[in-house]
Length: 343
Image (cartoon, rainbow, N blue to C red; front, side, top):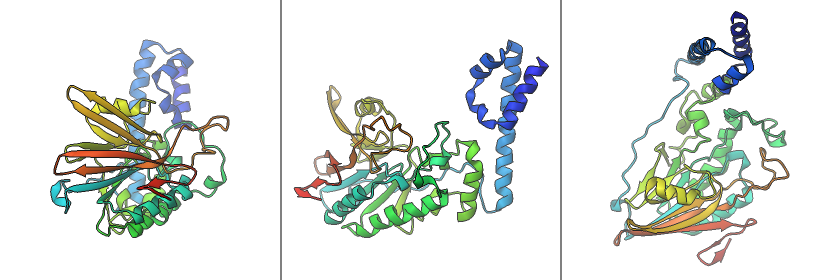
């Protein structure tokens, strides 16, 4: 019994990543008795607590101005109502999943041309604008690709500012367009701090920018973006925007029944629309596709093809009638048709 416990202590001390294996793994590997299992649960709880305290202490020593490892930002969100629009319509553009350094630059340029040629009241960047590949809590190893050879989280933040936020800010046809930045699961790799093994990388990032707030690292105020950390952004009581709840092939249908509303989501990288008529009313949901590269995906074996589609969603609200019309807009091989024009 003592020998087993010493082996487990040594393993978890030298390789803390095994904390993610869970009780079942250790029961099978070390043939733990009920007594050993109770000891294991208590020991792991204590170990995790000590590790978190050590990380926070290390961050505190690096800079007194830095806040603890996990910092959830909050911001006051303006109410979305009819006062915001000077007409009876409100035109919303929803786009997601740029994944920073993995963005498809040709698709990005097409999107920017649509943005500068057409009037929108608001653009909603609906999560996964950043990627943070080395902050992942999953064991899946990234393929060795040149793009990650000299990668750092600081270089990624600077990339997002230069190639995504700045162009969107400068090339919008409507100078008063509302620019909204929502969080996706990839941003939450940083803001939620779920991977304790990545604490050292995050500490370097916090120290470089002298802040633990993603909104300040990205200089969202400078580029006139609203930072929106909410789980759901609702428009006029008619339409919900969430980053993602379901990754299934039936995600759009699943989201209708999850929220019992119409809306749009990203995360799946697919571009779909589903319409459902119920006794409660008519509902529709759009998956907004992605803006990242589709081929040679860094974590998908070369024999497999990602079933993704580049594109975005537009929603036109009729404020007078209290209705809306949503459309998906695919970008195919670097081309996009919008309002009868090929970009």
